[in-house]
Image (cartoon, rainbow, N blue to C red; front, side):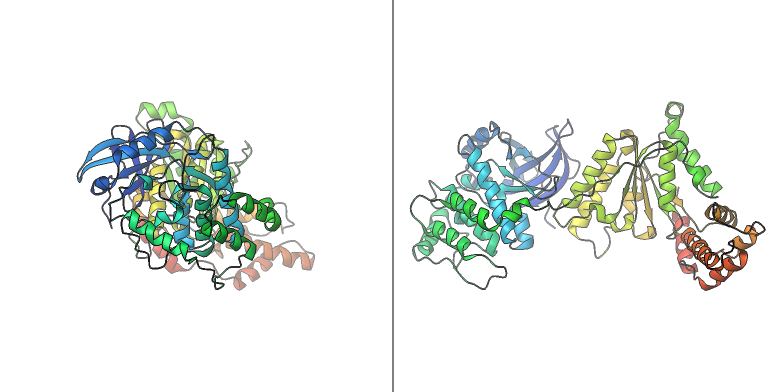
Length: 561
């Protein structure tokens, strides 16, 4: 793995806290940083090894011009700043943060994108450029285009300048593929650039790609491109994997091969109105599942949890009292828990207990499953994690309950761990730190505690692990009484005896057994009785085996808290 210039949590110039390394290219590295006012920014740093390839004066001038741009969907930049790093002198600038990815990242992953989506995207780019009071870009590449995923379908933002404009002509080690988006190296036409961009989105390749050495100097590369253009060497192959209307191909090809004033945007808009109206009126893609605050009630709480007196005493002492009596506990230097982990067999009431705890505390409750924050987009899951904690803080005091957390936070030591999973674990680590100070209690639940990343389980993040075991006999009796309440039941039935028969069953198993017994009683038109319950118990296999219980016991012995 390439060594990054800056490390996580490093403070740059006393102003910017490095949160994540995002990407690297021939010239620069990009980081997500946080300002002293808690704003998120992109920090772009020119590598010391690449400084000689950049016309610094041209770069400074471009950044100064862009810093005063004030238009919707245009990303502002800061001035260029030098900094001494281990490798030598580097230069950095700040750019507005977008929660999503660049179009370049999407295309590297997807190769090409559906026709109606590509048309919509390029139209949005054209609209942003057309609404500008004065031209701010002479050409556009996928690196200029940022896609935000915070509002459903991707929302387009543009970087207000292109660093490729500042690369010295004589530099040979930097790829010149961006020249494909320019009809002239001196006075480019934005329509030509948009047509090239649409071609790349639709076909998965650049129009002028054949036998071109993109690492030659600018003049040589552009001479090769011009030669292809003069020969009309653009591919019109019909072997592409998606259907592209001939009318759209003609618009693109005419623009790319033309030498006169282009009408690309006008023609594209006309095409969209004719063919793809549905793409602009259809329901937006849902990327984020909204969590609904759990309603609070004074009539509910841990009293609704059947039995489990030892567990309820533990929750009362370690969670409820420190939160309800913060001043008294603070006097003795005791702060509320940051987070807890509920672990144990499935069906033992982890989710129900978390809900009732939120009721007891009168906190807003957010229930999250892995599918709620999963995203197919690069950094999309990280963004959803950040938004979750942001919402929870806005509605504090709150409880975030994360079920099946092992699917979200697997160990980074796993052989199957990829870069994106690792980044998601890092995001959680960042958000968990000191979240109690923001009025947030995090409760995680899992049936597989051994596969969770160990860094999550350190104090200061998850302060306590709590085993939710199979219900004991007292709890089973209480649960039977609760489940049979308001049902026609044999008044002489000995619930303690029935509870003894349920020693290896989960709470969910017991609920199932009671419901099945009620169906038998309905058919017999009788009260629910011991014979019916015993019959169902004999026919019902426990959902947990003793090997699983042993694994939980082993994990419990390894815990410090």
